[in-house]
Length: 635
Image 1 (cartoon, rainbow, N blue to C red):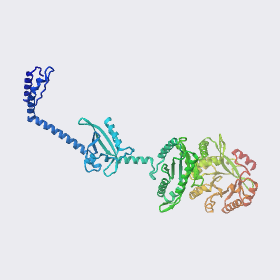
Image 2: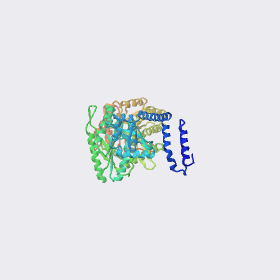
Image 3: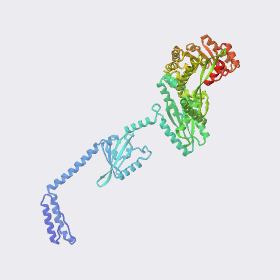
Image 4: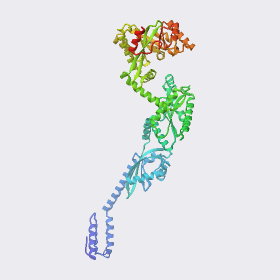
């Protein structure tokens, strides 16, 4: 720093510049105090210029500048090499314009030259993105977001030179170039990732065989339809359909053929419904059609749904070509209307399912709408099932005994009949709970209890002379009879109670035996070998074929009460009873007529040679103590 004035300043400055110029590197710093006028410095400027020119011409400084330039060129080349050899496509965006891109971008987009991309960036995207927005508008928004936040990642659909499109994941990062903000863009082809995501989505929400929505996706769409119904005020409908006799096709022609039929059914359903409707497969041979929107008026909406249901029945009734053979099928359809969120989605589905079963009960190839009374019956059935499960443990089940009387009026046997005394409902009719027990599988446990109770009673009767000669008949269900341990369980009960096996008579029906006749005969023979007797119950109500009756190791035939009831007013019933008695006699089998209520009925039966009668003519089913009193009175 120099603080003199005038020429002295100039001389001092001159000496300083010369001194600096005498070394290989030098820096000159001049500071002018406020009191030194500009006029004082003016004569010095030419001298300073000359000295600086000499400095620039010195070799050392030139080398330095050249090295700096080379370093800049090397740095730029490294950047270019790194930029061009990145495996992911990338480019630079400055002030909204594409100013550079790498080789990967050129190659993956299918262009020949870099300039093709830089000069026509609008070709790199379709007009609209998958979300429906214009590509130009969305690109502007994405760039502004990246400039504001520093980094922004999003998905984008790119377009190749050949016009094909593919999904990409794009990352925009803000950088500084020559003093201004720019964007460094890197993107990656995510076609494979999208394919895997779609496969996972399809597995979660679509049926792999028919490619229809599955139960989960249907439930979601039903919820959406119900929400739409709230806004629009329109009704919707759910049609639940089940293919009739599909099991026959599966069992006779194999599951591959069944699968081909299901695929054809799916195609036909998609073709017959409207674009706004949804066809879904629930599993097996069950499909659901979500029909919406329908009219605001419930009656009109039901008519519209019925029309679509009829169209479905018609298209499914047409022959299907499976395995080069025509298959004439049909379907049963149940329809439930819905309006808004008045019911949960699962309740609507359940109602349609119940209506479908009503269509099946009506003879199949039919359509039924949900009847609220069905729900009442279903709820009552569910409660009855729950009560029945408690009945066995709570000792609400009992046996009553109805005598079987021969032509001389002597009691030769007894049938044990199951009864249920409900604590609130009182006596429940057997037809109500026995059918329910068979459907739910409870009949197996109940049947085992009945057998055990019958054996216990027989054990007690052994020590009473008046009862010791009686046979006790017990009804056996198909589920119980076909259990693998049935023979062993009966044998164990007989041993436990030390009962003469011939005093136990098992009653079987025709229908339960025909399901697996050979198995039934084998089981019966095993028990027959140890002395157990058999009756064929309800004879005449099934096939009543002599071909199988003669093969069965039975001891007795029971004539069903439906033939006995009108024996004097219906000639056919009289002829059937006469034929059954004659057949029994010819095969060496005893005959027992059920439901005998009048002396006239028994007179006819006895005259034809019937061995015994059971019915209200002699006694109704009686409690154990009441039967003992009856036996003492009638002998």
